[in-house]
Image 1 (cartoon, rainbow, N blue to C red):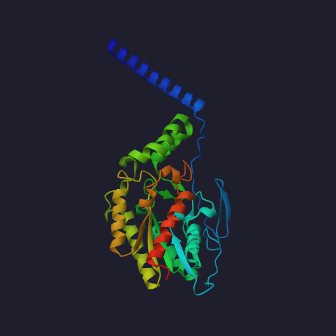
Image 2: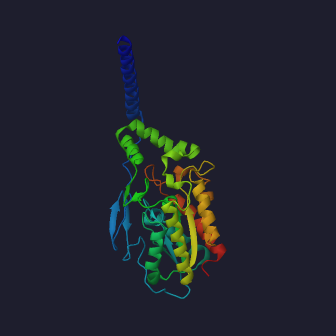
Image 3: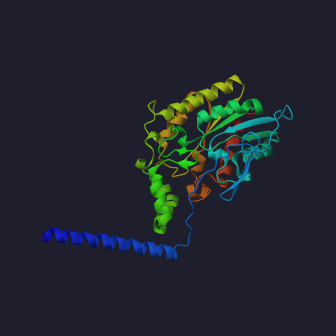
Length: 330
């Protein structure tokens, strides 16, 4: 009994000391770390056309077709005009970006500056879309806009089945890991300090542990529904483009974490590149150009790691260079 009593007392002392230690750290962080803890970023989906909605300090406007794009008449204004339909998810849509920083706006402006050719780049990106959704968007919008080039932007989570742990469902993240992290970040300033320090500094060097990511990002084969859906979408988009005399360009956006040998999605990146090349599809992999930058320098904010205006400028320059070199707008 005496031994059990001593063990119990030592356990209480240990727990009490830990509580005191973390309480001191919490108080110290609140006193000396003046960074305001941001609210959790929640993406916006505008489901109807001709809308104007302010969200998290940004204005989102959609045209009559529900796109974050200026109104564009159905018929081309001249035979020399070219049109690019940009398909993708929240990166193309421009989560957290003002209109002037949209990648589509910058591509359009850069193409005109470099070639003086009238090119309309249509932003058909919708948050949460994958290649199947993008195929349906292509079929819906082609009769309206008659594009000469379909530009499909791929992001890492396009290989996840809808509703997979960590994937976006509506505008909510379905992940208990994310919920735990968010609860700690919002309720403890010391936890928020550690999280921001890790996310902006250390993750860029050491990477994200595989156990923290959905299993369907790894060992990709036809047993993974998301991988099968991705390939199915690519085949359908390519077939539709060929049938309608539309050029097809595939653009890979990397997850803006450590872009080096420790990149957690290396297997995924290699398999996507190999698959797209096997189908003789024009391909741009933005990993290389973004690898020259600190990932946090390319984020909208610490809580929103979508690409910012600097990142869309880098991407637009790379894309326009490829389009002109490959003569995709003949």
